[in-house]
Length: 433
Image (tube, rainbow, N blue to C red; front, side, top):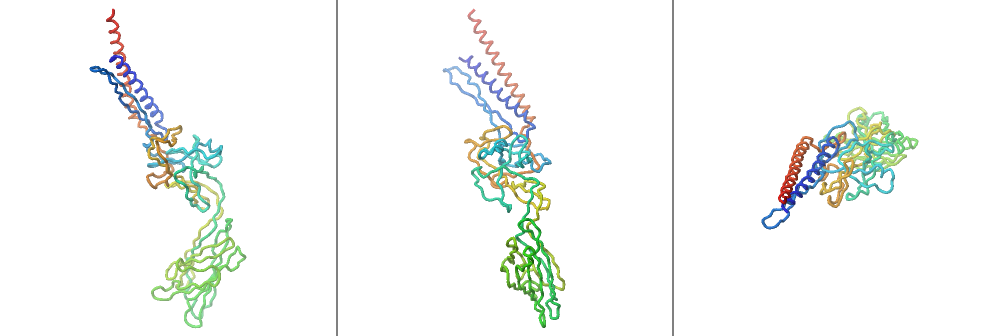
């Protein structure tokens, strides 16, 4: 019984060390594989209860585990859509073949890095056949709320390079100084005209013509102006007329005192904005709040458009795409405009090592890994996304070679025990002779 248990224990030792050698060989073979997670083998002893006074060898059992939560270092690249997770979390991807079939929603897989480039359909995918998933942004560049405990809202990140786009103007800010001398008695009363470009709903350039007409009194100074707004897209029709009164006190001289709406949208003194409705819709015009130096002022003797700003953009062509550390995919157009088109979340699980490992450094959530949650990159327990980067293999070749030497010695020792048991059994057989 004791001799045969020694034989069985040594055979178990051979099998266990063979399993460890297989894991070591896999780790070394993938030492240059981006995003690879090393496999670790651990041994557990088996105890067999023998008869009183006799010891029976139980042997050993090996267990392998892929350390998915232990990643490699980051290496920089030259591709803006090379992505790597820095810290905790996983990037959601799907099989490109499933995405191409478009038969329902593709199954979400998880990875920590990938070299994504646009395919024939404009989707960001790797050469190995993984398509990046994310939440689509709305036309205004904001990402609506999606459920975080399911992958139902995720769609393939599609980048239509050479796509034409334009954004209408919805807000203007006027920083203009009006000459105080024009509201003095005896002034000519000639208007000052300012043309302000805006973009309509089709990306065309239109103009709001603003004229500032002083109201000089018979004597003294009035500090009063009439501002008239005309829209070129409406044939030069008046879309708003306002009476402006400026303060000439020592504390707030030159700032707006009061704005009266003669026609057009109302003026809100708490925000300093008024609504001018052009042919394509309303435009918010900021002329400044009363008592502040922002917007319109009346100082000195010169008409000076100091700061004119607006949102919106003309029609432009998409020229590049980048992903920021929070997972937002930004498209840049040749007009200099940048728009958010997608958001890539980071997926976190209670036990990443419990996921099912698949080909191409991808993983599938399982019962052992726990329920997943989709976080904004850089929020909660997750790390952030790094573009222009790939995550290197987690294999330490020096460590693997050291483990291989130990495994080889252990395997040889177990083989030696088998040889010794064979010799002892041979001696037992010779007793009969």
